[in-house]
Structure formats: C-alpha cells, structure tokens
Amino acid sequence: MSKISEAFKNKKAFIPFVTCGDPDLETTKKILLELQKNGADLIELGIPFSDPTAEGPVIQGANLRALKNKITTDDIFSMVKDIRYDISLPMVFMTYANVVFSYGMDKFFDKCKEVGMDGIILPDVPFEEKNEFEIVADKYGIDFISMVAPTSDERIAKIASVAKGFIYIVSSLGVTGTRTQINGNVADIVSKIRETTDTPCAVGFGISTPEQAAKMADISDGAIVGSAIVRVIEVYGKDSPSHVGKLVSDLKSKFSA
Image (cartoon, rainbow, N blue to C red; front, side, top):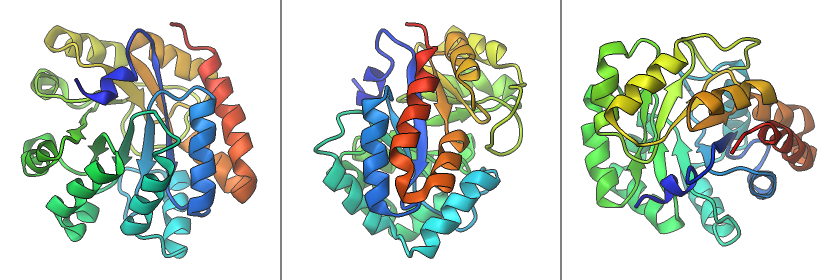
C-alpha cells in the first residue's frame, strides 16, 4: 500500500505546499516541522523552477527568491534527507518536467527513493504523456500523482482508473493563487472519480481560508493549500515558521473527521 494513502486513512487530509529554499533551506526545515506539528497529513514540496507555468504570482515569487539563493535540486535532496528523520508524514515533490529531465530521470527518481519521498506531481505533463515519467517513477516506488481539471470532463474516468497515491483536483481554471470564491464543478468531478476508483482525491488551487478548506475537504478527501502559506513566508521570511504553524492550525481546525 502506498504511504500516501495513510494520509487519508479514516480522515480528511490537509495538504500544505511550500517552495523549498524560500527564504532559505534552514527555514524550510523549520517550516516542515511546524506543518507536521500543526495538523498536516501530507506535505507538498516545490522544487523551484524558472518558468513555473501553473503558478500564480505568489508562488512564482517564491520560486524566484529560491533560485536567487542558488538553490539546486541536489541541495533540496540533501535537505529532505536531513529532515526525513524528524518528519513521519508522506511527502511529494511538485515541480516541472524540465527539472526531472535535466537532472536525469533515473537519477532523479532513484534519489527520491533514497531520501524518502513518496510521490511527484508534474503539472505541465499531460495525461497522455505521463507514461515516460511514470514507468521510471514506478521502478523506484514513487507515486506519479494525476491531476484532474474542470476541463478534463470525459477524460476524468480514464485518468482516475490508473491514478496512484491520490488524485489532485484543480478547483478552477487558471494558475494557483488565493480566491475569494472557489468556482468549478468540484462536486461533479469527485462524483465521476468515485464512480471509477476509491483512490483518494484532494482539491487544490485557490484555497485560502479555513472555511474554503473545510468545504473542499467535505466534498472530497482533502484540501491542498499553497499560496496562502507561501504568502506568510514571503511576509515573515526567516521568522515565518511559527506564523505558518498558526495558519495551518487555523486551516485544519474546521476539518470534520
């Protein structure tokens, strides 16, 4: 059984996202410990990329700050290896195809296994092109996480039927970022997924308040929050870990079992 499935066992999963190396890797380590302490069930770690096409301005800014610090993929692997002794939660990388290609696909997934990562999300890889990545990821026991968007429609059943780990539901069209209202046909998407598979599904893109997080978790199996957390890191920098912990505690507080 995938370790990722443990995040959803008998509960709604809260999944925070942070960009590694923003403002630096030591602070990222402290933030990860705060995430675990304050109710995270699974953690998404962003590997910085110079052209993060799925990201809105907040997470783009985090990518740029980390890259300005000369953070490399090897630096991030080393950080994960160090912190893995203290983090018992499942963790997945979120990055882009070019990061994996340029590192070397076998080398990348071998390293993921070595440092204790559990899955990967590549938002710029279409479902029809995922096999070349997934075959290698499978070889090293890394779940390739599928994404379903409001436009997926007739492809939802096909995507869901082969999904591993969990299914990432994109709540609305466009890039990541906080929104005052979550649009999209999330309930319909969840219904179609559940007709096909019992693989858990979690909703991301745009969730920023405890109420939004709870609503999306009620509809699905969990909620993913990125921009709201990254904005706190942007404001507080090296002093952000405790502020992130407070936000995560607030966001998780309204989840029902």
